[in-house]
Length: 605
Image (cartoon, rainbow, N blue to C red; front, side, top):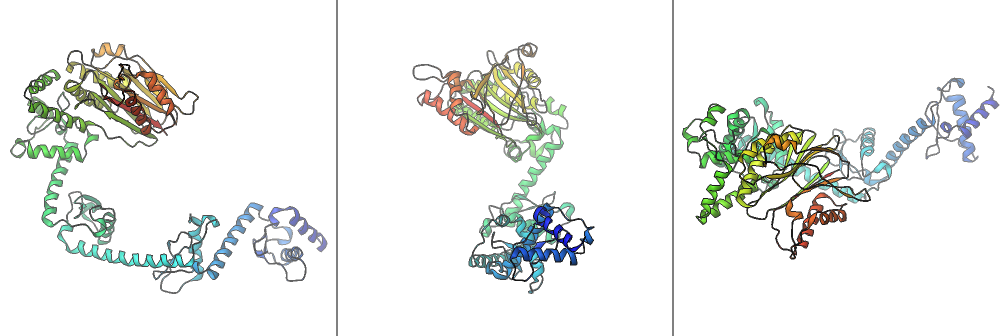
């Protein structure tokens, strides 16, 4: 094309093609062919005309990518992205040249960001600043700096950045002294040299096995120092260097205790003889073959430090056979020498006999109370759920109980139960039922099947007219389906604040556990499936709630419970159960209720 046609082509492109309309803040035009910035010509003409002439001259004479019209220009989005990159480079260069807050570099050659006021490693060696390398480091940091906010943030004053850099230098010097101190103690102090059989280092402050670990005995000094420092920084007994070290003698004694506990834990995992239990749910000591009521049934999932400590205390203080005897060699030997387990009725008779002995009865009650308190489960932290229990026993010992059972990685079981009667009888049946259900429900996704087997365990051991009403549901965290059984228990309540009527109760057929043989029980009990949704809360409770009486003898009843749920439908589970209990207490005018009170609320997030 001739010169006039070429000029017309450029003018049309500048008017209609967005790829040709990208200009920088310094009035340079970005060529969509070679992506180079083109400055406006120097002349007395207006800026628009100067830019037009510069474009014509650049494309027609100097642009190697135009190739006489054969070149392909970049599209508009690509040109705008390029412009943003160039503008960012210009901005950083201008700030480095003219803003004191951007020029703070500490003796370690860290650049201090004026936005987040934090040190940025430059990688510059020596004391000579390489401007190009520094600019690259700064741009990489600012792209990720939340305080910079892609250019929307505000820079701090230069004096603030300088002061923070000086504080950072002091902190770095203090840390260097700290690292030198740790290195000196690791190399020279004997109380810093305790490692267990697994290679874990024992801290001389907290005397606990730490994450500092030497697998296979190979542990470089650099690795050990890094792991040791990492622990000391979070060790509460180190307390930033203010704590007191334990002596070699103290560490030796504590290390001996931990070694014994490690051996107990190892045997619990490896040897089923060490996990034996009688029909009452008490752990059987493999040495003295006696049931230990303070421990209960031990499963592989329940082996924790508290359990191991209880066993060690039994061996040390109660078991005469531990020091001189040999443990049972097999499960058969363990049970053959254990003797006939007492039935619930026998144990109740024994405790009732003790009741006539005054102080001894009180001690038995206190002991039963302590055992029950240990059986109160810890509320698990389950991703996607908020879980809130509330448990108020009416006497020293209770017949109410609840539990959380991990059925699989994606399924959790929730149990709320109430043993008929009160006091020691209810407490003993409660202990048996809780242990039996926990064992039978592990890895069993069907509540009906789990409870059917548990009923086989419980029914022969219950005394006349004693039984367990319960709700047991298994929630699938993936599908949000709840499979549940109502074994003679209260209706299930579901709270959904997104609905006009946010509260609904559900009732299905079911017989109390332990009342009849399993063949009859399973005929009268139904497993129901309920599809839940995010934002919903399901709630269970015991009779102590709905049967709470006011001074006139009127019961609280289900409809008042539902109404209270409606008023507090938008609260989280923990607040909801508190409000429900407050309403019950308001109904009774502060008078203690006649039965145990238990709530369990679970919200799906």
